[in-house]
Each structure stands twice: as structure tokens, then as C-alpha cells.
Image 1 (cartoon, rainbow, N blue to C red):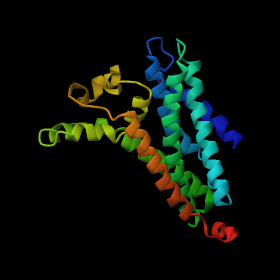
Image 2: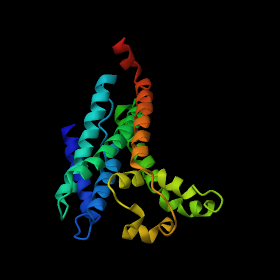
Image 3: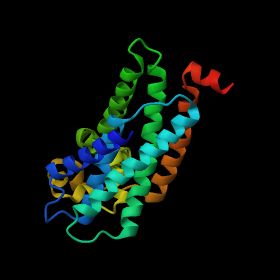
Image 4: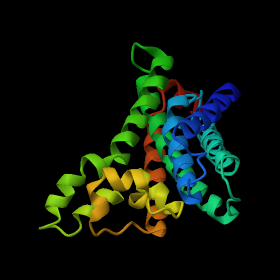
Amino acid sequence: MAARIAMLFAAVLGVLVAFGAAAPDTQPSALRTMASAAAALLAPLFWPGVAATRGATARRLFVWSAAACAAAALPMWALARAPQPLPDVLQSCALLALMLLASHALAAMLDGRGSRLPGGPGDAREGAGRAVALVLIVLGSMPFWLGPAAELLSARHAQAIDTVLGLSPLTHLAVASGNDLLRNPWLYQHSNLSGLQFEYPTLTSLAWFYVALCLLLGVLAAKSARPDDRMERT
């Protein structure tokens, strides 16, 4: 686990540096968004896998999610040109933690089911992490690839644009970081939604959504435990 945590920290920091997070003109809120997004996307790829029992898997899920939050929080301070307010960092990491718990619960569920396949636990762990990362990529990029369709639908359905934005985990992390996502220079140039009227979801609604999602996925992950896990607990 320690080696995976070290690799995750290095990967998050490397991605942020490569994408210019340390540039002098990077806004603090944009840095928080970038660090949170990098950790949310990379953490499932380093998912350590389910443990021998449900209880041990649950503990591993919380420890790994906490490590991923730390991998996001440290660069927020290390790469910032100006001091990051602690309440803003905590707010960003709080929603990130809920998102990580949900995504890793999904990874645990897929991992537990996949371990019964011929490929074995190793392939199941890697496949689960990649599947969760792919889901995050698809949902996170919705304002780009689904933006034109949302603009067309908005003529008849006023909430189409807000719905597309609201379904994106990247939007969620930006809201928690206090960042106006579509007003960032690159996003402003490459998303048609930036020139339209829209409203971001509220932080409170996002928090309740992820709490409910964590509970749902946690129950499903517990039910998908390997048969020997259930026998061990009876």
C-alpha cells in the first residue's frame, strides 16, 4: 500500500506540473480544481484491490481515499504562488473525499465480481480501476462532447445545459473549489457552453448526492464480496 501511495503522489504532482499548474498566472481556485481532478482520476488506476474480508476492504477503501485526498491537498499548497486559505482547501478536499469514496466503492464492487473470472485478482483489480477511471473521463468531459447537443436541446428544454454541466464530476470539483469552470481560458475557448446562460449546481446538493451515492455503492460493494469472504464471516 505504501508504494502505491508514493506512486499516486508522484503521478498527481507530475500531471499538475505537466499541465502548467505551477504557472504564475494560475488562479488558486483553478489549482485546487486541477489538483482535485488529477487525484480523482488517477487514484482508481492505483487502486490496491479488495482485501480478504468485507471489513478489511472497507478500511482499505477509506485509507486509500484519504491518501488520494492528501495527494491533492499537498500540491495545492506546494504549487501555489500565494497562500491557499485553509477553509477553501478543506472544502475542496471534503467533496473530493466523497467522490473518491464513491468511485472506490464502485472499484471494489467491480473488483470483487471480477476476481471470480479466469484472469484472477490481479487482472480484476486493474480492470476495475481502469473502468472507474474511464467512467470519470466520460462524465467529466460531458460539457465538451455533449455541449453542442445540450445547446440544441436548450431551445425546447431549458434545463438541458444545466443538466450536462451538473452531471460532470469536473464541474462538481470546480464548484467545491470556488472556481468558475467554464470561464477558465482554455475551457472558455473550447466549450460552446461558456457563451451560453447556465447555472452550476450548489455545493449542498452535490454533497447530498455523493453521500447517497456512497451509501448505495457501499451496499452493492458489500453484496458483491467474494464467496469465501461471506463464508469467513458466517
